[in-house]
Image (cartoon, rainbow, N blue to C red; front, side, top):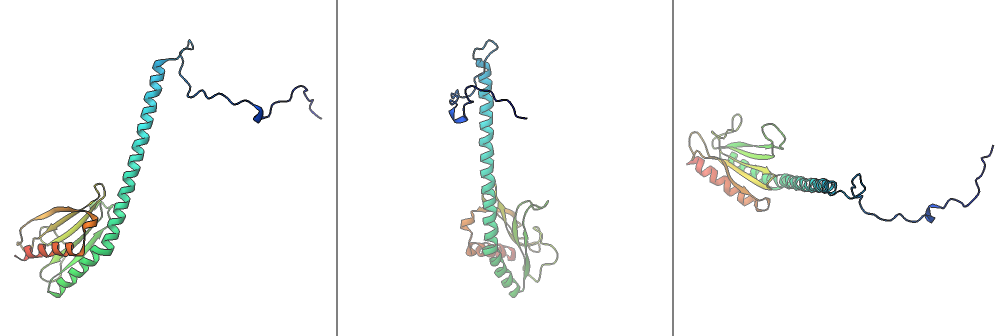
Length: 195
């Protein structure tokens, strides 16, 4: 069974259709058909809010990207420079009758939310038990990705001696950290602890 064909002018092909005029965004109108300024203002408020949210999302994305780049650079610096320097210092401490241990935390733990590396030191023999800030000299570098810096913590307590100072002492930029700077700071800590 065939369908009857309607004769007359053929339907225009899509390419033959005239383009719709670009009227821009629809303008709110009142029930009378006139533009409504209050509804237009509401549109503007919501568009502005949407644009602000988009800018905030972009800002947060860039912050997170910088934070991750900093953490990667910190991790690479620790592996390439900080840990090997601490290993050298620890070997020398042991040769001279002392001891210690290096403790690293990658961050994301309840007690250690950010990455850090610590050299705990003993002036006589090996370190027994965990290092303690109120009993053992130490040197620690904490990553601070929110500010893009490294927080330097140190303490010089040893058998009731030292200056009894313990805690954050400086902030360093990743680019300024060198083997010499780390060794110099550790020697200063040991000098005070032995005094």
